Image (cartoon, rainbow, N blue to C red; front, side, top):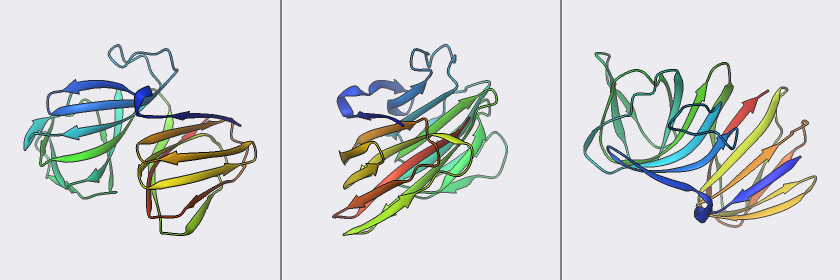
Length: 193
């Protein structure tokens, strides 16, 4: 099990038409978002304008989950979709997408045959959860949006604060316990390999 703990100073910050984005992780690590030579990319973004258009990304599958704020997404001429915090929405990156509303969101982009999914965990005060990867999951990523938490793994433990990120690779059905002494909100990505 290989772990990498990242803080806000490790993230690559960029701008898009509607706000800012922080690249939390990209794989392979030497790939480039602009050339789309990645298998998957995990990021957060702020939507700062009341109306904005998402960047068109041909060949990219997208999953978005709002962390704070409600938004309404309209893909081309389809019915609008309202996203409230912690709802996940899947869509092809080459669809013209109009966004109404402001939010902070969590994003997963995949290319090719990469199989991955976004999830979330809410840990109540003085509580814990146990993550046991289902068969085939080889990587797990955790973004601590709110609170603090201790991640306990067979190889050791990591204490995380709000805004930090943890990548865990080479999972072999080994459990990860997550403990918090306050309410903690965690966005997660699981990748099959």
